[in-house]
Image (tube, rainbow, N blue to C red; front, side, top):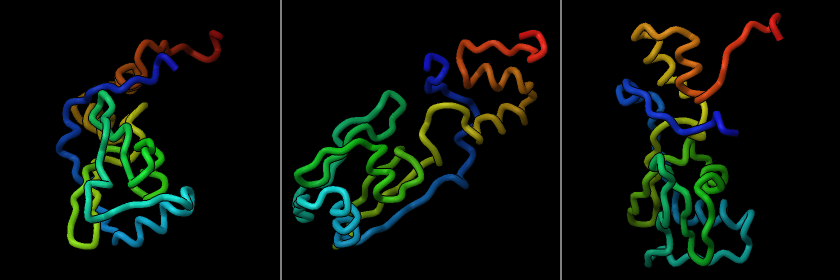
Length: 142
C-alpha cells in the first residue's frame, strides 16, 4: 500500500522499554529451525549464522542459518524475536539476539506517536506523519 512507508520520527530514541535480548543455545536454535527446515545444517564453529542484507530502515532483510537463507521476518517468527531490528552476538555454545523495537517497522510506531503527542502534535498530524499521503475525512461526508 502506498501509504505504508518507513518514516523517521524524532524522539523515539529515548524509549528503551521495547529493547530486548533473547539468548538461545545452539541446540535451541537448531530445534526451532528444524521445525520448518528439517534438513538444515549449521556449523556453529564457523560463520554459518550471519546477517546477509538489511532493509533501508536498518532491519534484517536476509539472514543465513547454515545451508538456508531466510528473511528477517521469518527469523523473527521462528525464533520469537520482537522485531527484525536485531543484531547477533555469538558466545560459546549460544547466540544472543539484541533486539530494538517491537513490531514490523511499517505503519504507526507507538513510541513515535507518543513522542509526537507529548510534543504537541494533533491526532491528525500524527496519522498523516505515519500514513503518508492519506486524507482524513468526516465519515458522514462519504
